[in-house]
Length: 419
Ligand SMILES: *Cc1c(COP(=O)(O)O)cnc(C)c1O
Image 1 (cartoon, rainbow, N blue to C red):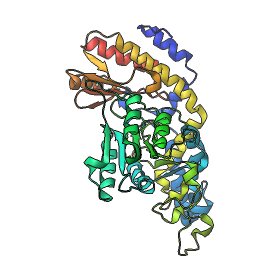
Image 2: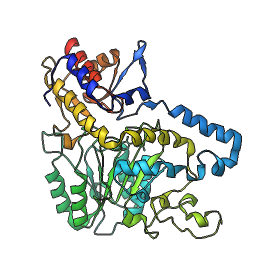
Image 3: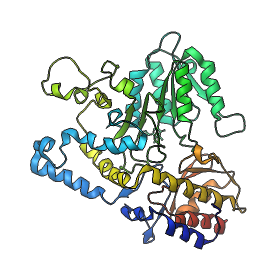
Image 4: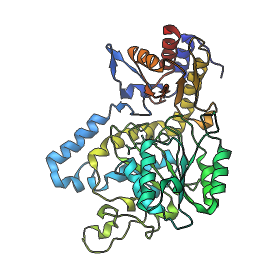
C-alpha cells in the first residue's frame, strides 16, 4: 500500500480497520483530561476493561465460599491455569498439552533450563544473542556457574558484524555450526527487546537440533505480537511473560511451552512440586512424584489465582480477535509508522529494527544520534507514552489491539513540528 503524510489518510485507514473497535475495550492513562497515546505495550500492556470484573468474581468466590472456591466457584481454582491453555496454544501454535502458566518468566527460564541443560565435559555451551535482556543473561550466567563452568567459556554470545545493529541469520547458523558438539543449548530471545529484531525461530531450531543441542526461546516480546508455530517448528521449550502484549497486568503469571516429545514423557527431568503431580494421585499425599504427562507437569505450587485472573480475562479478547487478524493490522500499522518516520528530515535518527516485516513485530527502535532524552521528554509532554533506553534509543510499539493509525500520525506530528 502507498502511504500518505496527510491526516485524512490516517483517518481513512482507521475507518477501514476491521478490528478498530477493540480500542474501546481498554483503559488508557490520562493526559490533560484525554486518553494518552500508548506505545509502551511492549513493556506493560494496557488494562482491558473486563479485568476488574474478573477480579471481583474471584474475590467474591473467596469471600463467599472460602476453601470451597477450589471446587465450587464459578471458575474452580483447582483448574485455574487450564483456563488459559486453549487461547495460549492458538497464540503460540502449540497443542494444549504443551502449554501451561506458572510463576514468572525468569523463574520459569531457570526451571526449564534445569530440565534441559545436561552439560557434559564436552557438550556444555549455551549460545545466546549478545545484548540479550539482562535477566536472561543473569539466568544463563548463574546456571552455568551452578554446574561449575566458567561463563566466559560456557556462554557463546553472537554479536552483530562490526558497525551493524542486527544479526544475520546466516551468521547465527554459522556460529551454531562451528560450536558443533560443544553446544548444549541455544537460548535466544524470540525478539530482541532492544533492537526489535525477530529471529528465525524455526531455522535456528533446526540448526541447533542438527548439532544435537536443545533449542529454547524467551518469547517475552513475541507472544501476543506475532503468531508462532512452536509445535511444528519443534522448539524444545519456550517461556514468556504475560504483562507485555498479553495485557495481563504487572507481574502477571508467566507462560511456558514444552514440546510434546518432552512434555508427554513423565521421565523428563524437572524440579517438581505437588501441582505438577498426576491429579489422581495428588491428594493421596504419598511418596514419589508422578508427573502429569503434559506441560502442567512442570507446575510446582498451588495455582496463583490472583496472578492469573487478568490473563484469563485478557485472553478472552485474543480469542475473539484472533492473533492472525492482529498480525495483519500490526504489519500495516508498523509499516505506516516506518513510512512516516522516513518522511522526517528535521531530526537525525536511524531505525535499528529490521526493515523487513518478517523480521520484526510491532516495535520500532529509533536510535537518536543526539537529543534522544529531550525528544523523549517532548513526546511524553505531548501525551505519547514511549520508553527510552540509553544511549538514545526510543522504542515505539503500536500494539494493534488498542493503537490506531491516527495515534501513529500524532506521533509523527510531534516529531515533525517540535524540532
Ligand atoms: C520482559 C522480559 C523479561 C522479564 O522477566 P521477568 O522474570 O518477568 O521479570 C525477561 N526476558 C525478556 C527477553 C524480556 O523481554
